[in-house]
Length: 289
Image 1 (tube, rainbow, N blue to C red):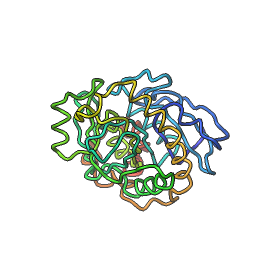
Image 2 (cartoon, one colour):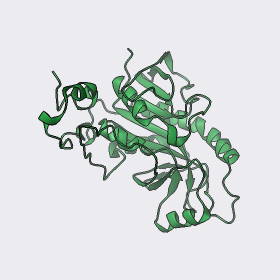
Image 3 (cartoon, one colour):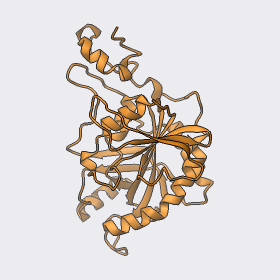
Image 4 (spheres, rainbow, N blue to C red):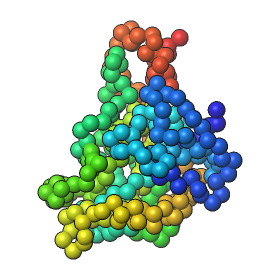
């Protein structure tokens, strides 16, 4: 099976990047089912990169139904240790304009119907999540975005809603009162699951609209989102090219050891079959043989 160091999760067109070569598709089965789609693996700027369309080709998977655990597990099985998420978001701040980019540093979870952990059913894990985005990867992403000349904002809280409907006006005003910067539907449980997989995770949030709070702008529509997101695709590709060979070989953050002190279940109480099934995630702490 091919290997990759960097995973890109976003739209299916992102892998059509100039200079992306030795491309092949990989279909992976995981203990959590199939990923959203086949993973496209190739070489970009001398680095092995894997692209995964979050909603599947043709955008056929609703945010709630995205097989996040299968997606992250599949990327982990390819050797991915850094993930960059590309997502469309709405803005809660006047100064964050449509077509701007945001590199968020915090999350507020308003989802209700999503499985948000690999574990349970015999293994209890409490992974730290105070800082949901890897600060080192986020900083690298921000610096690369700056070089494109696009307006980019560093930091900010992302409210993740369940969807698939957009926010009500009252909800939008509530989230603004909390001081949140952006709203979207895809960062969770993706960031939580990536943390449990000990993968560095950062987001490139592409602002498409002002949600529905801004009286001077028309209410958000799917046509508006798609049109503005497509305009941002070229910029996102340029940033990905810049980031690809700037991620250090040795990770100097806490992400690679997120589970070190997080597995609280007594080792002798974890069934052998579960140790084997979860070996990709916990094998370095709890060998099954």
